[in-house]
Length: 113
Image 1 (tube, rainbow, N blue to C red):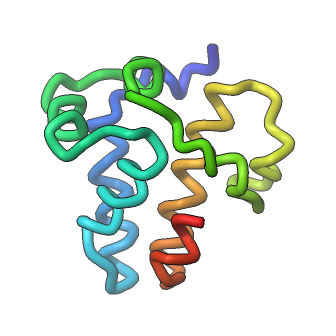
Image 2 (tube, rainbow, N blue to C red):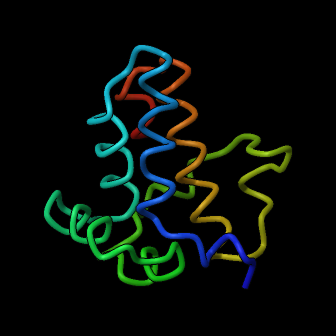
């Protein structure tokens, strides 16, 4: 596994929120896209943050990856999301891509495919 998966979701989450807030969006938009992708409800998402689970555990414990996640395409960190072979890395990049789309001001209806 890549070392990024040892990072806690709680350390990544505020970075996502800060990113979208700098662009005039709300932290609740981050919650919306993360919950859409992972199937966590609000309580489950806050529990993952409070427990400080690492990213690997965060995705392993996710109730269900949204079946429409495969429709997420584009480039994140110079790599096309749809071409990532490692399933865990693809999930992480899906999440990154969704947050990027929120920060860019896309409408939630198109972000959530």
